[in-house]
Image (cartoon, rainbow, N blue to C red; front, side, top):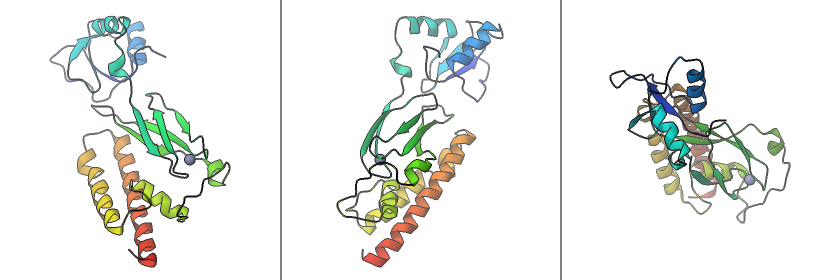
Length: 213
Ligand SMILES: [Zn+2]
């Protein structure tokens, strides 16, 4: 694994339009070894605007200035047990497990001009069959309802008005127009996320209709 994490856009000279896909520094090193490129080629770090030569980038890495490429932390509530989780996002595909209930999550880095991560529940049959302790919430809401609230980034005290507003805002942020400039992977994930948001809204709509708003 390369000491330079993150993703980069590559081009031979300033007048050239870079390929739309980003590559990792591992791949850049591989191209260098094969002499398909040399260290005078220009790279731009994802999230940056400045192009530098590969040679300059390597010098910068040697000096230890790696912080700009380090992915951020993210906090969220476990979708199953609602324990607060804090994970360090990694550019490599990584599975994270909730220490409380064992639900798995994976982070997906999008092919975007700035680092965009989606943390999505990973397929986890162990968690689905109830392995591991699951803390019941104080209010004993059905797990389906709690999950739906988590998807809409709400807590158990939320009103139906809050549900409606959260649904409207989240749907807006994953709208195809908003993700059209991103890679096909992220567009697909936005589509999945939109379906999750709509399904969660339906669950809550039914729940509030049956239990009062
Ligand atoms: Zn959990």
